[in-house]
Figure: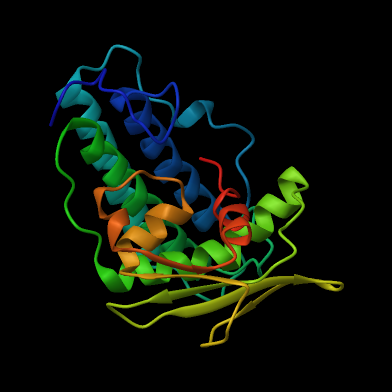
Amino acid sequence: RGPLDAAVAACPGWDLRMLTEHQGVIHRWARHCAANAARPESTDQFEPAGDLDADGLANWLEVGAAELIDTLNHLDPDAPTWHPFTVPRVGRVWPRRQAQELSLHRWDAEHAVGDTAPIDPELASDGIDEYFELAVPRLIKREGLTLPSGSLHIHCTDTHGEWLVSTTADGYHVVRAHQKGDAALRGPAEPLVLRLWKRESSRFDELSPVGDESVLQSWLALAGL
């Protein structure tokens, strides 16, 4: 719903058409990687026709999503695959990654045109876990980021989920436990995952920061698109 030229706040320069095209290309790209255990030579083959209207673009998105779901439903979670992350290249990465990708961009699309439907707390908590397991190590590798020197504790208050993230002399560490950090951020899982991914949510007043503000802001500044 809403006009295709509606701006997407979390993705500067993007409108709803560009976000929809991005998500549809990602569906087809991920399906190729999962089905063939190989990276495609280019994404050109996955691009939509340039003259699609809103209904045509919606149909194109749904077709790609259905094909991806069918592939993931038949995917051996332990089978070899290709993906760009630092975790083992096995099939189980893809259902989770695509669920989280779509959850966040679904929120982006709704935010661009009106009210957003809630993100399920368990899905959001898993999104926090995946953020620390997949996204941060990839940002370190791809962007050469220097991580904050202090530690951060994240604590979901509406579902399971606690993490302590830190940087030591031998690298980046994630501990899934209740442990004190130099800074902490507590709250419901949805505004927590949106905050980590730099989305602006009206639910941010439900979050409770504790400890060293500079450490907290340094960790929250990491994410890109």
